[in-house]
Amino acid sequence: MNTKAKKRNKIKKRIRKVVFGTSERPRMTVFRSNKAIYVQIINDKEEKTIVSASSADKDLKLTSNNKTKIAKQVGVLIGNKAIKAGIKSVSFDRNGYLYHGRVKSLADGAREAGLNL
Image 1 (cartoon, rainbow, N blue to C red):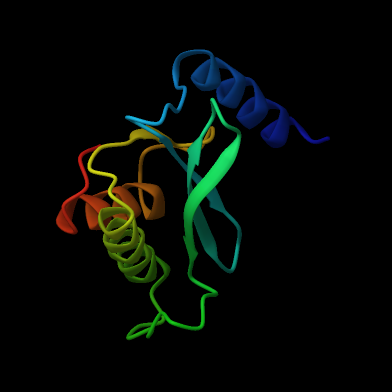
Image 2: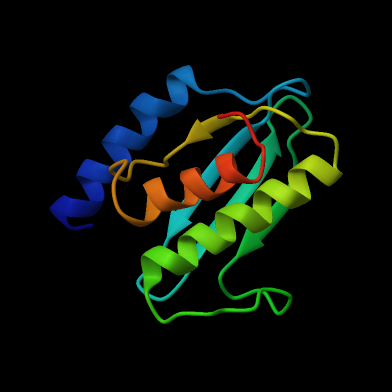
């Protein structure tokens, strides 16, 4: 494992000590690859994924090639799905990534859809 991945895993473990998803306030976790961005809302007590979305979903109509704008669209999509599932607030797990760029844009999109982070 390279040093960048080790650093991210160290940060990820530090975050996961604090962030825990319950049925009242599930955990919203983000995975960012070079091509796509994935997000899940997870209830850690029951160990179940409630809602998920990604930039690779077929129901997402991409309007741009800009990864940051795509991440915002995914955030709006996950926010809408969560509201339909009866979830109003989540705890945000950035999964070791900096709260900057695509991760921040995804969170802003979820807030726009009415989700409380």
